Amino acid sequence: MIPLVEMRGISKSFGPVQALHKVHLSLYPREVLGLVGDNAAGKSTLMKILTGAYQPDEGEIYLEGKRVRFASPHDSRAMGIEMVYQDLALAGNLSVTANVFLGREPTRSALGGLVRFMDERQMEEEAQRLLHRLRINIGSVRLRVESLSGGQRQSVAIGRATAFEAKVVIMDEPTAALAVREVGKVLELIQVLREHCVAVILISHRLQDVFAVADRIMVLRRGVKVGDRPTAKTNMDEVVGLMVGARGDGGEETRAVATVG
Image 1 (cartoon, rainbow, N blue to C red):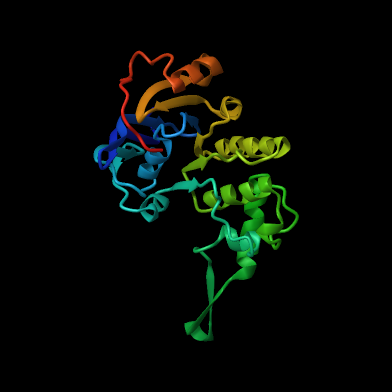
Image 2 (cartoon, rainbow, N blue to C red):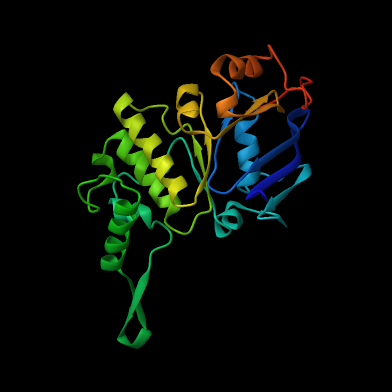
């Protein structure tokens, strides 16, 4: 099977500091990939390259078997790659609907096309359909985001990421600040995304969450890929050992390099 996303030999330095060294990542359709590593392992840098925020010094990116180059996050979003950042980037004073369509508002014309207005009715109807499709339980799409719980806000951010035909959704620590009950809801939402043929890259320090939903776990340490395991064929002890350097993946380079996160 051809990977949906493939990053080959990705290297990145910031001055004398090498953040990534010849990292390879593959992501398959409908797969949930857990991307783990200690602080400064290179996870964020790798994802910023995939989303076009950074340019690699070396390496290539392929999407559905075709080589691509993302000059900016706009380019990656246009090709179906979305990222939900840890801070969510939501506007608390706006409604759920406004946040879902922020920057992509549909419009309608008036006065023979001389004037255009946001089509608020269409936005509300589409936002409601989106929440229903993803099984997100929020009382009304007219509610301000600032009035929602942490888990509901996370769900809105994930919903926004999938609203425009996303193929890949990258989630950065989506359960870090949530209560146990809300963690379960977000993990359920990840499973729903898989059902809708969306592939997910889950970055998390909470290994129990990664093991709960990931099909495969990739481990970075000091900018180097040191492990890549089907979740069913590994355990937390092995993954922690890879993260801290207690053991290495036989097929991967494990040299230490200075890094930034």
